Amino acid sequence: NDKYLFTANLRADASSVFGPNNRWGYFPSFSAGWRLSNEDFFSSLKNTVNDLKIRASWGKVGNSQIPAFSYLGLVDVTGSYNIGDQVVPGYTPATLDNPNLKWETTNQTDIGLDASFFNSRLIFGADYYAKRTVGLLLNSRVPYSSGYRTALKNLGDLQNRGFEFELSSRNFVHDFKWNTTVTFGLNRNKVLNIDGGTYYDGNIDGRGNSTIAKEGVALGSFWGYVAKGVNPDTGDMIYQMADPEAGLQTSDMAIIGNATPKFSYGMTNDFSYKNFSFSFFLQGVQGNDILNATRIYTEGMWEPRNQSAAVLNRWTVNNKNSTMPRPDLNNTDDNYNSQISSRFVEKGSYLRVKSMTLAYTLPKQVLERWKLNKVRFYVTGENLLTFTKYSGLDPEVSMYGGTNQQTVSSNMAPGIDFGTSPQARTFIVGLNLTF
Image 1 (cartoon, helix red, strand yellow):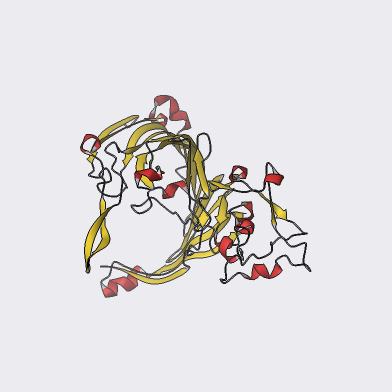
Image 2 (cartoon, helix red, strand yellow; image 1 turned 90 degrees about the vertical axis):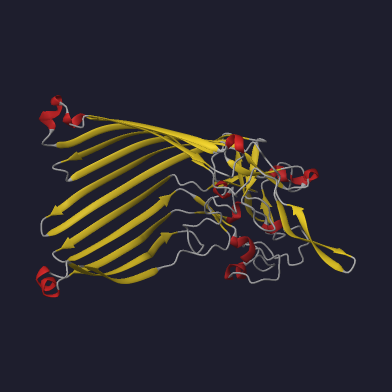
């Protein structure tokens, strides 16, 4: 009677992105559950607690999302050479070989609880998870004497731990129906080790890398100078320095923010009355930072390009209390006033009306005349409203959004807005026909 549950799986995958010795990956998983509500000792609680189950699982998954044949040293056919009066096609080395490349693997342990109350009018779920990712596939810098800038390696290990909760309720169940689902999650991560001790990523054109990963530090940490305001006498930025007499040094750089939210949340409500239905979904995060790198260019005033209206309040001899430094169009101070710094780090918390749908279903007596099973008209809106203090176009943004074959290390640099297009606000009018 489903008191005790157990499953086991084993998956084997082979990928040509790895060499012959590491081509195969083996990924087992196990899960077990105990439905306490089916035990005899639980019978006295059945009228209140309809179902109660505790569960646990462990599994291993692999990642091979890197360019094909990455273990080989590849060549580029775009080179050409002038020999005499002829242009002869040529080949140039493109990637450094690494026969030791292997699967990036993640071991995950989950412990959870599921419960339903009052004839399933109230359903609750809770999960704790712990993930350990081993052998992160990243592009690592190599000595220029090798003839290459980077090489793909299994570079480090990462840990993620967190909780997820979900509460669903059927608030009204007669002609007027109202269902609600609320979700809440929090995640904490840190780098366990990294080859070479430190890994920089999130390159901002003209300014260098903007994120750092090193042992014991949370992933998604922004790396730059700590801005302390504008010098009213000179109009230049004031940065935190270990030795002001020596001037600004790379050793003065520090962690200036983190892109990981302290928690995330969401809420769905579904309403229906006879043939009408209405639903909406709210989603948000709290406690994360965004590096608004777009402002480095639109407020940097170091090149003859369009600037935002904010620079109209820049420092001048008649506006010495401004928080916007003076321009440096001649680039005489090595872009001193527009370095990657906490000046461009903003709070990224937001609450968004993610979607909203209004629908009407034709009555059965109308459908019978047309020999149809169901006709439903609906109007849906997505990304309708966003409540945030972030000054950019969209707080739900990341220049390096997800791992792909062009940007292997993109997940190492979340939360960067560098001219990224915002999500579109869309409206859909539709008709569903069922015959």
